Amino acid sequence: MRSVYLLAMAFVVLAVAGPWLAPHDPAQINIPHRLSPPSAEWVLGTDALGRDILSRLLHGARWSLGLAFVISVIGLCIGTLAGLVAALGGKLADWLVMRTTDTFLAFPDLIAAVVIAGVLGAGTTSLIFALTVTGWMRYARVARGIGLSLQSQGYVVQARLAGLSPFAIAWWHYLPSLLPSLAVVWTGMFARAILGISALGFLGFGVQPPMPEWGTMLLDARIHMRSTPLQMIWPGMAVVICVLAINLTGDALRDSLAEQERRS
Image (cartoon, rainbow, N blue to C red):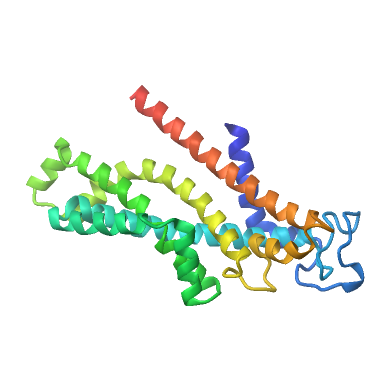
């Protein structure tokens, strides 16, 4: 479990310190050294424009993980708010929120995100909006389910009888109980956001050149997939290992919370 946490933290460090660790300028074009194999100067080789792949991977970690963090946090806030409105707002609010959630869940996340990004146009803003719109529903379901289960708890009933407003009840009594479960959901959605960013980047709807991002790197390398497959292998491995580390961290966090509940 500790090794999983360390691996996840390593990617966070790369996302934060990547630009200072990169040995070369990720946007510097060097045609004489295009498609160079791994060497002492070019540790992971160069791409079709002679740009250092290692430097682009390190800079790309900031884009991939940074955008995924923003998207997952926005989705967490929207979904938690919607779930609490459904749990505390009465039958009509519950019906409206849940039917809206079901409508969004009826469409596959990635396909819906591609459609939205295609309508809005390529770019970072469209990417954030598309993946946020398709990623808040799971938070809402978890928040609503736990919120409904808390309504019959003694301390919640006493707070309601004491005249506390629904907002105060949600802030002081519901959120502390929601946070552990939402943290587990957030790790999974964080990983899904990285996959979504990479997928949209590969389709041309994500971060635009010359900014390095793992999905965009895959898009640039696809033409030379047969002659120099390492160009696609490096960013592909970065996505796979990062997503796997985050998912395993979420599983470890869930098991830890379940163990604490059994002990209590």
